[in-house]
Length: 319
Ligand code: ATP
Image 1: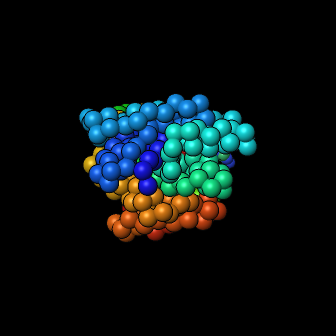
Image 2 (image 1 turned 60 degrees about the vertical axis):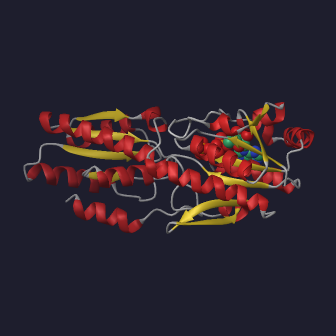
Image 3 (image 1 turned 180 degrees about the horizontal axis):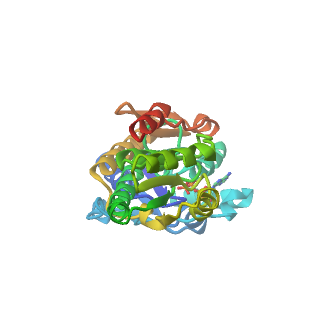
């Protein structure tokens, strides 16, 4: 193996830079040249490719976002687009590709693999919604951002004796809301994986009011629905006023936590090792603190499971 490529694709996540750095440094350590592809698959099709040296990834381990930039590309979903990508890879003499991104990005990698081009996936998304890994790169940083917001909202919630609804990202996964809600001591955590009756939530709210609790924090995952509509519904059915905070894109930014940097370094380096071992169509991940790899096809047909025990615990602790 002489030359490999690396790209970031889909939504950005803190720690992607640490993963890029690990890929570049690990490859160069093994005398393999690394080519950075900008703007994900879009840049790949357009030949937006540059050789990376050791210095090119200096001073980025602590930065959020991705120095390679990322994009979503409709054209890459077409056969012609994928053909163009393969032509560029061949033109540059690149023999294997590390794709850092979410499940959509792995679908793209799967397409390249089915055309005979070796790819390894590295899970990078704040959503923590990928099977085959306990954690994705970016989740821990995002979680800490959400937690900080909950703590701040709690200060004003206690002072004003109000009920606050905090809407988190996470797409169709409830991990961000669950972890942040548990860590932040939220009274209610509402996530897509659990179909909780609205009346239950109201009941909890009223019960806590009855026992003299005047403030309350509800963490709502975006996958469940819109926090403003939820707030309206509470008002209509109970008369209780709630205030809404939609955290939005701050959840995607910021300097990655130690946890994310270490994870990204381990996963990025392992991806290079797999290419050296002539492996393809694998996604690296972490299970019980061990680095593992799984078939991308299995990852894409699998399902990320929420930790039900943790959800139940959050209920027990928030009575
Ligand atoms: P995140 O979940 O953080 O947003 P993601 O990787 O899931 O990240 P997507 O927008 O779903 O983000 O996918 C990124 C890119 O991967 C797409 O814009 C597209 O170029 C490519 N891609 C997605 N699905 C396919 C597919 N079925 N075939 C080929 N390419 C795909």
